[in-house]
Image (cartoon, rainbow, N blue to C red; front, top):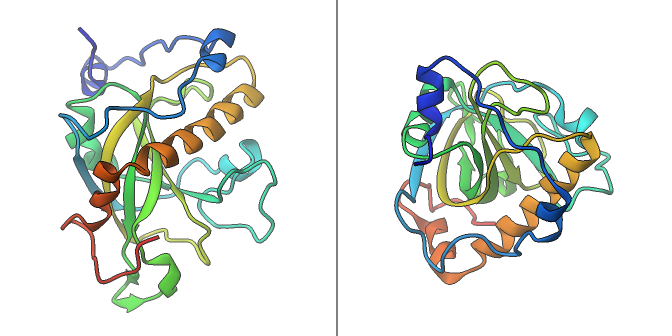
Length: 217
């Protein structure tokens, strides 16, 4: 039986992640999950966006948090990372294992009672989510890092975010090099976009949890 992420938290131990192998790299599918979401999906997450570890732009070749005007050419899609508070991830960690997931997310345009996000940044965005301990960086606590595949005009720290997790891509892995991690992140993005392009997944862009008066991207 697969251990859900919350069980490891209760045991107060960081689980050991398997090392990524060359066989895994060469045999990754282009699409993940069945033709339509199956239980426990969809899973709803919400919370205030927090500062992460600041390693996305420097270490992984894609900006996280505050966007850069110069995007790395290695990025498939410009992404910004949103870290959710610990208490916000319980609906997911209690029913799923650690790993990489995909779905949609939306950032509230308001902060401190004012509209501060540009119109193009207010839509429902495709996202990839990592749930786990990020073994390559040896994090000490379970985190949920949501990467929104969109080129934002400004950061969104302190904004409310809603996310709908629709499917599972792969388990959490450890790496012998940062290059291997970056390669898998890029593959995760491609798999997420292709998986979400299916009709049964695309319709969740209009799910009632989102503000559907905003543009859908």
